[in-house]
Length: 561
Image 1 (cartoon, rainbow, N blue to C red):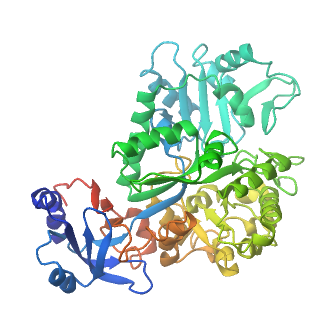
Image 2: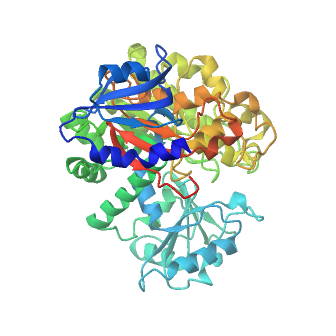
């Protein structure tokens, strides 16, 4: 009850504090600082003008140093450094929140029923968009077809993103629109970096893998600026509501960065965004022309570029060194040719831009590592902090190369628990030993940065902590965890979402720990993630989220609180 009473007073305390106050103090029973020099504390003091921590220490010491400062009592709640999602997609999340939610659907029929309900919100002729379908959850795990959609939607065009964002499922109406502007989907041709799935007669089935999906999605009318802003703001609120104070946004276009800049200028960014340019396109050109970008408000920067190597494992687009175990003669897709990829990496290197590359299959990861080694050459020991995003299925002989090259493994714990039911079917019992192998990376000396890849997974770092520590689904299966030797400790998992994520973004002098001089970014939780039972980590409550010492989210108290 003390916790609820104190938090109920939190907003009134802030509202009644003197307008001229420059220092504020927060007191809590437990503060996990993440700072090895001072792992725990009882109070934080920060300057409200700069948003930086002035002191971290005992409650008695802070109150003696700042006796006149407004005091916030968090009671027996637990404070941790602000949580950072090291791989996510804010604009994509905003768009997804405005579409039909197909996440968790257990059959094609359930997908259609959800689409029918969502269609009632649309105007005549408007595209029906959805995201989150996953055939691996269905009794019939074969890819769906146009026939599954055409009966219910003969005229309205549909485009449905697979859960991993690497395949689209469309109906005949959508195919007709795309064919009017291009070539027929039937035949035996394939687009670069993608695959049109076809039946025995050469007709498209309605599933488009990776680069092929753009043949249809390019014809979906783009939202106007007002809609884009509204959607991004919704995504930002979802993030801070779940305890995120920072996001590494992977694949940000020149236009999306301009929107983020406008929000930053208006003081509407409630968290920090480390934006990574969307490949070898306009945003990277801007970085090379104008230099690395940092907004003066401190909540937006673009210092890196996100490149693509291959597709995803769930849609069998991840590039493998040998055939898929459950699909002979298929070794996945390269979304970028090795030649074009090296050109992009060299360009980024010449512009001093950090490189982050999506690579999921063992072949995709090997090409990335080979290219990094070739381009970095004699300066591979410099503090480049290049990254591999996902590093999902990696040959055991390639894992030690991450540490040797100084490459960060940017991984998403919930991918392992989402994929564990079928991953071994895709790659077999030997290759799966190098899949989602977090401890193998740590033992080799490599750095991990943890994230979610939302909206592919949920925008909730608590689920990432739970998956990292248990390697189980939320029903506690399998007993003991899948490949339990690869589990992380609670401390390792929390570090992956705080200081290690900050380090991966070159932000360790700003955020990631609670130490004097750093930003006052922190989260107030109802329990201690380092001491509570691992199986309850997904039940942690985010009581409040703070960025620059500003309250950006507070949980609404309930009568039972």
